[in-house]
Amino acid sequence: MAEVDIQVIWSAVITLILMPFAWVFTYLVKEVKRQQILINKTREEIAYNYARKDDVRDDVTKLMDALHRLEDKLDKVLSK
Image 1 (spheres, rainbow, N blue to C red):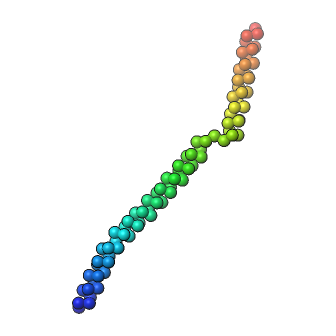
Image 2 (image 1 turned 180 degrees about the horizontal axis):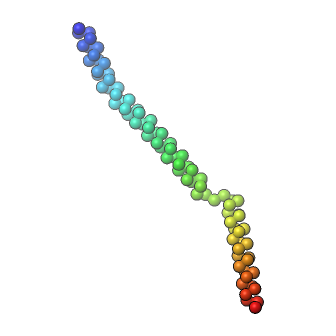
C-alpha cells in the first residue's frame, strides 16, 4: 500500500512540475506561428507598395501622351 501511495504522490509531483512547462511550450509554439503569419502579411504588403520600373515607365509614357494631346488642343484653340 505504501508503494502505491508513493507512486501516486510521485506521479502527481511530476505532473505538477511538467504541466506548466508543457503549457508554456504550447503557448510559445502558437506565438511563433502567429508571428510568422504577421511577417508573411507584412512582406506581402511591402511587395505591393513598391513600383516596378516597367509600371513607372508606362505611367510616365501615358502622362506624356496626355500632355501632348492637351498641348495640341491648346495650340488649336490659340491659333484661332
